[in-house]
Amino acid sequence: MNERDLHHQTASRAAANDRFKKSFATWLWGSVLTATALHFAMFMLWPDMTAVNVSPDIPVIKVVDIPDKIPPPPEPEPISRPALPVITMADISEDITISPTTFRDNPVETLPDPPRDEARASLIDEPGFTPMTVPPRLTNEREVQRALEWEYPAILRDAGIGGRVLVHFFIDEEGIVRRTLVAATSGHASLDEAALRVAGVARFTPALNLDKMVPVWIQLPITFEVR
Image (cartoon, rainbow, N blue to C red; front, side, top):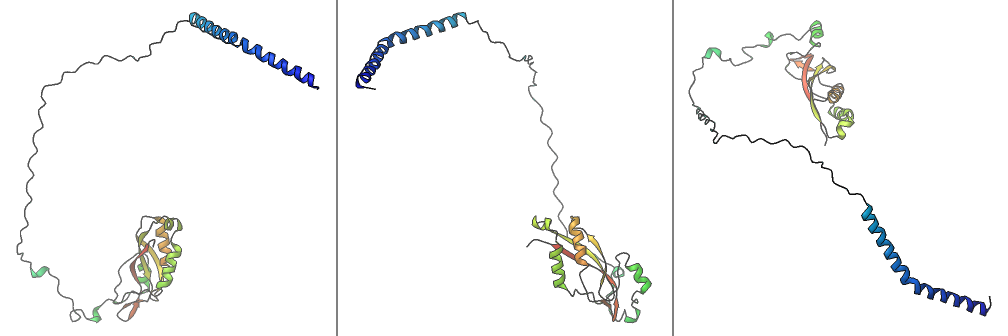
């Protein structure tokens, strides 16, 4: 493109720009008048609109006659004052008192014999009383403590739930636990079952009735707690 063509193109753009500026007022007012005419025609030809009554039908409220005065309820009866305790002297007959127990009045020869084998068979069936002078003593406390930690149900331990189970132990003449029963539940079946498993680990010294080893039932609590 030479200099003459470039000058001619620039002059053409300047002339077109001048023509647009001169016709701007005509286009502006023509657009305004056209928009005004269209809006006026729209408002004139738009159909009339009315609101529909959507209010609910409310029944007529009737006024109820209220009595002028309502009699109050009667006053409650006064509460009687509690009687004061009175200290008196009571005469207790000596016939109903229990005489003191002494070895002179109860010699060793008159004590009942230890249960025999046939008596032991019935004794193991359910908890009962066996005469003894020396109770059994736990000999493996550390092993029982480890079993207590091992048998503690993990779901209850993690939730911080513990409990106390009262267990019946049947201990034979050698101090071996032959049977265990739940005497008082903890309220959780899984803790009761764990307590019975821990009870089976326990070892005791034999119970003595004078100088004879005897099988006995004892009760011991097994407690599960989060430390």
